[in-house]
Length: 424
Image (cartoon, rainbow, N blue to C red; front, side, top):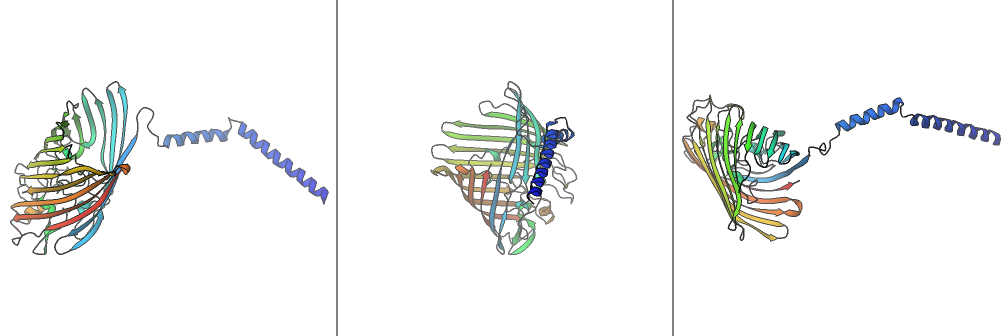
């Protein structure tokens, strides 16, 4: 038994050493087929692996995530919804990069993808939001010179986009502005009876073919945009968007005598019937003028923001044969921005805006001949610097006067929302 065990151990040891020797010999053969396949596979993986740039062009990912809880009351029904804060302001991430071509010259790119799975612009008495999935809002390249300015080509915010609205430097621009991002899709009531007309139908922008209320030229499309260098805080912009949209704008930011100031003015003409399908008129020629400003007393934190816009639709006809009305809107926000605690700045504000004769195709079909839609509200924002975060609480109320339908008047609509936005 002992002889058998010794013989078995010797045989097993010899077999293992022989196998190991063969394996080591194969591994040492760098020209062998196994390692050539391995090197080829490694090269393939390297080709498909995301990198931080290519040593010439950088890659940076930024963005923010935001959600809110919205408690609404139309006088008959009330409910609570959880959704985002609207397109263009929605949860998003941006991929940007840049490379130096020569001293003073750079080339770069930008992609912005927004999450529209909880778009509140579709929230009404029946649904909390609409799911429009992920949306590539912007994708363009640019060449920039510190002396000659910047030229961008692709899907982009054109020259006058939000020229008035973006002057708001209070830290509340995303949370509270004059666009009907939330509350606009709810149906109005008259004496408790639900109407087939929504609040946004009294804040319609024919330039964008959407019920935006304010910022009627907040257009993103394929185009070419030029921005001048900033000189003493001033810059000018011009752009062309395909088939056809022409825009010019001027902007200023700076500090003067203890005041933080911003100013924006823009003008555009849009004849593109498919800016946002479907078409709503036989032909289109919407001219939009906008102007806005901001002033903040740095010592006290008191601030004032105001914006004004008007739209001239050149008597074009809707598909139902109604004349597209010329309209205007104004908006004002005032408050205080102070750091009372170590968390970050606190912003307290009040706001009011009015949309005059912004009757959309549905309101016109319902018989409206003139309208005045007013929205006012108050709110508080707390910034948390350590988390690049803002939390808010706001209250808003809608009132309207319309000639042509609802002789009993329009019932008020009100809502409270609380939410947060965190940057990354």
